[in-house]
Image (cartoon, rainbow, N blue to C red):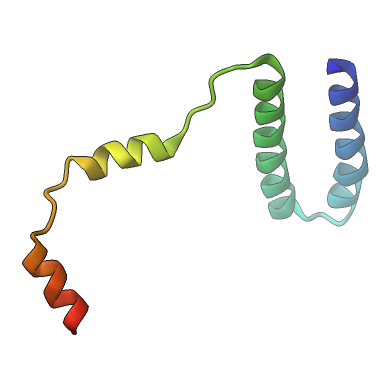
Length: 80
């Protein structure tokens, strides 16, 4: 299964990389490589069962520390 995954990565890279280099689209190449590497990491993390960082958990923790508005404030916003 890992061999198939690596083969797919190589085929995608072989199809996209020469075109971007030939057309000298270096900004598009940088964006493509960024998302390609993120995709490779996520695919390997899924395959091997690695823990994947979830930014939503950090966001919820930060939002949970904020004071909750009172019901009066919510009622005022709803009436506007």
